[in-house]
Length: 234
Image (tube, rainbow, N blue to C red; front, side, top):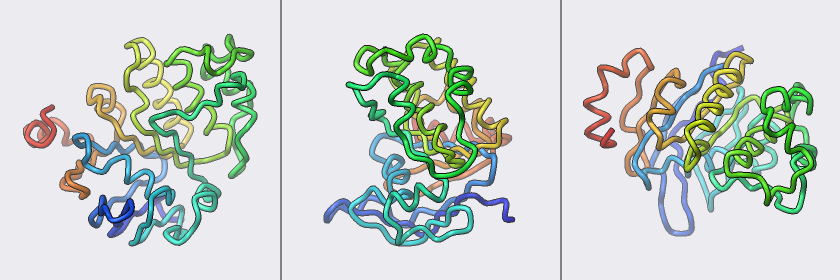
């Protein structure tokens, strides 16, 4: 079996007549954490959405676990083992924490049980009967991540999961990413918070104007700080 879980080749994406992605190319290996860096508007979120087919139209190639997904509907892509945590979280406000966790369909075997979720996110265990609207921002983010772990997805697309959260919650989410990598999950993160992303990622790709303009392993991060400062203002 190939080490690659995801291979994106010459990916173009459109919203109506707006051409957002202009030939994106990158790979993600099994069990790897990859972070997409870039300024706002660089195309990072659209890249995650285009992998799933949640854009107006797309072309190119998206290979997920050895299967071509470019022509598949989003729910078919999800069934290849892909879980997406959008920036807006998508919590069902009228449902309790536990009802939110019980809602998602299975896309593969090996999804976490409720007991495993609550062990990973103790805050959610304490709030299992609480309505979504009554959870804090940090608890909602934990719930959004936990919910996709219930599905059996092995490739996780995480969009700005640290945004706007208190440092203690960000630290808890970082520990969760480390734990998920140890469990063999493959993760693609879009992050504006460089301090959060830097210690977690195995590799980085930098996006600008809908293209990948740089890519390097975590071991080269120190040597690339000048480039990142130039491209991102880091």
